[in-house]
Image 1 (cartoon, rainbow, N blue to C red):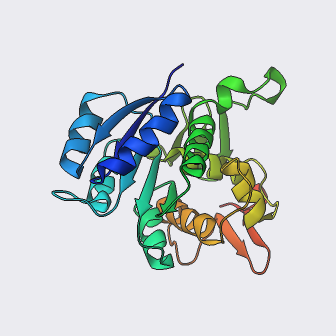
Image 2 (tube, helix red, strand yellow):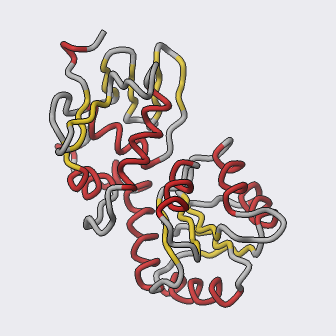
Length: 238
């Protein structure tokens, strides 16, 4: 199935460069040059993934991302000329799935887009029958549905992005197992561990905000200092 990627940047040369590389890979492209145009495209088109520049006129990428996350779960990659950790963490906290600094290698951007599309849309469909997951994983007050990738806590639905679903699914299905940040990144992002710990750390923080009664004193997702994270064993759950 052909996927559609929305490219949003006020620099038309960047949009054209990425379009040329992505079209060669059989990906359909929708283009926008500011946040307002992009929001109209998202509402009008069936978008599978969005690549958003942060600094744009009329509506910047951060505001667009906030607006997008109120209604849509599609994967989002942020582009930014800023290469500070604070900017990256802010973008991930707002709901981005990945962050790429400018200047970039277009081949790397294409590879990241392909990996994001693959893990977000093709995981369950391409899994062999013996690896197909059960319909639900239940731990404590949480019920994670693998059929429609939804999470409920005490019957109330909690919206998840594709990355959040994969991360929570990995942890919930192996309660008590300690995962290093490297293991989580390579399993959830389906890529080599090319980043520092910020990407995993910020997504863990976002999950805690969504599922924990007290995110600063997490009950479900526990930090194992010097090692990584684990999900509480069922015997420990209330």
